Image (tube, rainbow, N blue to C red; front, side):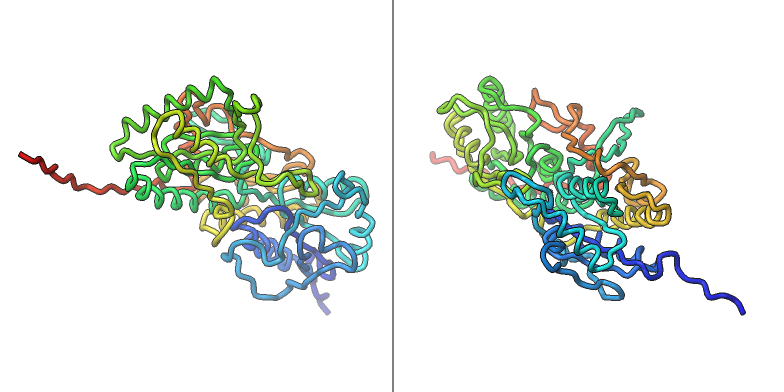
Length: 412
């Protein structure tokens, strides 16, 4: 009698968690990973609220054979900024609780979807206790060191492309496009504040929506640099056909304050999370106020806030996570734990396949700022090289114009 063949991981359990800030591509990532693991024979669990779901008695749901909407933004597993390792804010070592629940729920492999914080903690648990972990990239800031290559004008250079970024970038492009009409209606300068604690990758997406100038965390705005900036603002406004201007600024811009004679970010709250991050917010209002004061042109700040994180997963992201999940299947079959799938090179939508992916060590992801040749700090503008990078994901829209010019009435 022929022996019945079983799938390679029949009887094993894989669990997925999402940690840190949400993105539009998290549910798509969960769905894609779950589907590949299921085909290999795994029972698939979802851990709710990040690492918090492995504390206490655990908070685990069964995803095996369940319908799942990967187009729906955010994460149905919920998220938190819980750090299982000891920190200043929480000195308790909660790793024993994590290990106890991994054993209780009979979890054989753990997949952690997150950024440097979430995946960094997972890698330490893997190294210290041998828990089989696989990382999966996630950040709308797009600042994880993935080693992804961008080819431009025949030259190759290092860049980054993480799930969630494209959906956020497209949303911010559309957001900026909509603001253009209100800026024009009031002949106003609008300063658009965009998420980006340490890197300006996402801020550049506003350029596709019509923003003409931009400030990023990578360039410190000293007193001298501010004077250059104000002159550039006056020049750009004067040359604008619409007599209006949109300026995109990262929330993490370092700005000189003449009252304190210090350069710092603007904090929305001084309270820090378990990874030591304070909440930024309000730099757009500060800059708008300074523009009005220095140029005598009316300016207003506009905080996009969580808008970039919100809403459905876009097509490029959906296909990107599918390609990376295919690589997860390869990692599982080879049992190469402690690693994370990444895109080898920036490619068009049609080229998003597993053969354009590779893996990197979870301990080496770190943060990767906007490359210097992506941003012109003399003109406070993103360069053509950055525009080329973004054009792989987004089609630059046609800028809307009101094409009529009314004759002026002259009293005789």
